[in-house]
Length: 284
Image 1 (cartoon, rainbow, N blue to C red):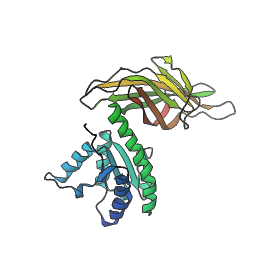
Image 2 (cartoon, rainbow, N blue to C red):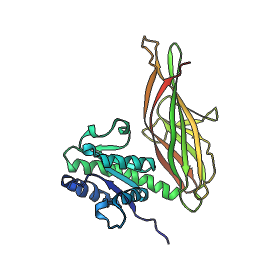
Image 3 (cartoon, rainbow, N blue to C red):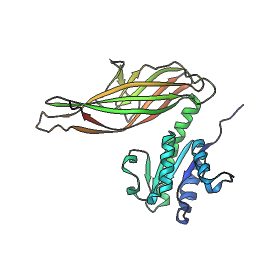
Image 4 (tube, rainbow, N blue to C red):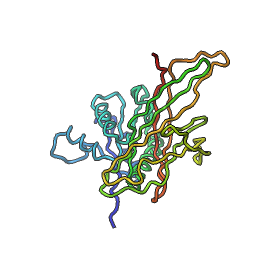
């Protein structure tokens, strides 16, 4: 019986001596305890140029772990390449200021000067990444964010956020995916979900961190090998009122995490969806 390959985490970090224990004790050992093979490029034997090797390993990696400490230019560039390839990225730093503003909504760990803090915090991060990879391997469905954008609808007294979602479903394997039986999108209080201009049915959430789950219609029953489909829907919620004298703003940030659950003939699979957008009122 064919077994799945080991989960491979490629580690990006400066090669300075002060990062030796960070890598060996703070990253490699906790990863190995979870059955994840973590490697840096300087541990590998290769004949190609080092930059070509790094980009090739990012392409092959299931997870990319990057230490952003000191804002190393090479690491920053390589992280950008990993994000462009839709890789699962786990960012680390010993100083919170080293995480750029536009990446602060991404999963990241601030470990200060403590290797033990890094070990304690990286384990749940790697467990999350492993669960996402297991989802992809078992369902043969990988979900990426094509676009999440927002608009603001204002009246004299209220401001409503409208968030449009475009999520891509990929099958990177050479066999058909699991059969999709239903899809649920999880939200907090007061969000309504619409698909094809119709309100999606909803009920109480069965996940403790969310209040509601909303039923979505799948764009396809099963993804063929190397197949792709797109799921589109929007959410709406009142984000501010002026009934008690508050001034309504022209824009509001909307950030947070949600979950998209695929229920299939192979079980259900939960995919994390990161939301980081700004809703703006439209001027005519």
